[in-house]
Length: 414
Image 1 (cartoon, rainbow, N blue to C red):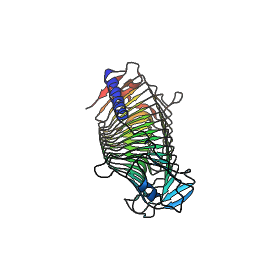
Image 2 (image 1 turned 180 degrees about the horizontal axis):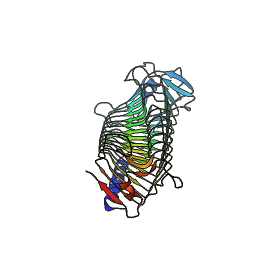
Image 3 (image 1 turned 90 degrees about the vertical axis):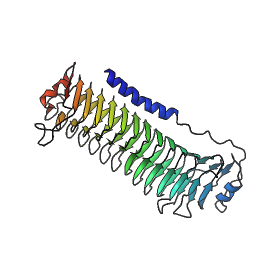
Image 4 (image 1 turned 45 degrees about the vertical axis):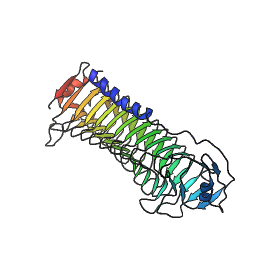
């Protein structure tokens, strides 16, 4: 690997490490008193108002119709999401609103074993809203059928463990400002706009999650940072993951498949590092890079995508190392505009078009001409007469056949 590529990889990995180390969610609140079990004919809000910091408020089985305002560190403990239900009485405000009283320390709240639902009328209708630096841990809950599932504002923090966020008419988890979230073993499905919307300089750490059957899987804008590990982003109607503006992402051990459009799209000046993942069976390119965005991919399978395996346009930057790109309906890798691309030790097999093609004549009947840079070495890109060959040819134009050589080379038209 060249020194330049080494620094690219180390730099992007550094971004992920900094985001993760600086993350910092609270410990569970210290328990002082376990109150009597609140029953459905009683008011949860009255119990909250009487509670001291650290108290546990047990909830019985049944359904409550009220909106809660929580401004102190407490635990609400239900009997399980199927048994304990909080339904918003006022449908145009949050079912649970967690914030800090003016001039006081931000609360740390634990929600456990309940369903939060029914806040579905308008942009201020959220299942759970967290603001003013408050912190919430949501364990084994269902946040369903709200306009927005969970909203984090300013410096709020949330941890979701074994929780389902579903059927929001807008988004599942919406982060703004400098908010931080961490999700472990949670499930996001049926959210109409997106499972996750990360804006501002918010950060999200997503582990062992399933993000499926939403509009978009993730939509990350501003300078947001996302770290996704051992998760699946599947069967979403639109793009699996979109990163734009100056957002940053690291994606490890994750499957991105069967999405209605591309598996991942990067635009403007976004950057992403993908390693040991699978992008397969998406109904458009597996990966798409445009603007001046940068995508670095290693040890990853890109397979059976309905468009190109990977497409790069405008001033997009792509580094592909030790990957497999197989069974793309169009080109294995399509390179256009003034893109800057490096491909090393990658197998590109059984594409419907060329294995690697520049978006220009004679490769395609277009008026465009490539004006960027392409370099690489030691790739396996068979032609149509070879085993696992690419249907139209190995590479196009022929003067980029250095991609197959052990020593490699560079085509620089900048």
